[in-house]
Image (cartoon, rainbow, N blue to C red):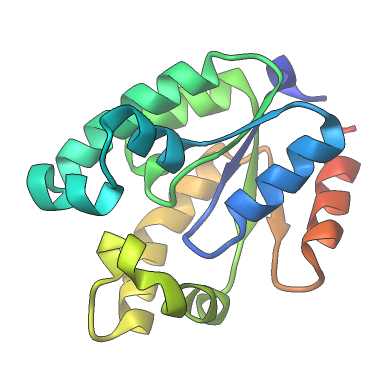
Length: 171
């Protein structure tokens, strides 16, 4: 059963949260939000710029406000940023206000899917992409697992296959 008729997608960069979220919302005929896009819209600046000017903590503070506002809505699919789970406030509101789906991706998937668009991912501005993704996974994966109602692997199959698995879990 879907809590509050909200579905919150969590998981690492490159797991497909935004792509799958849009398609899932369309299939369910409900609104879709991406917390990163909403954060940028409200700030009038890119996440990369916010990182440069305010640092990661400044960006995370903004993210907490955006997720609190969006998660209070009803009948939405919300794709969160990969690091949203770092804030206890975010974990709390996501777990309480919706059904949390952890889209799990392998390290290789993440490397392959993020290698071409690292410009928009401040934490991936490094020489050794795989090591950075492994480092983030060690910290974040337990937090994803902590609040997930369901875990869905994005390794095998298409986005439609993942959506079918999500719908099987929540309906």
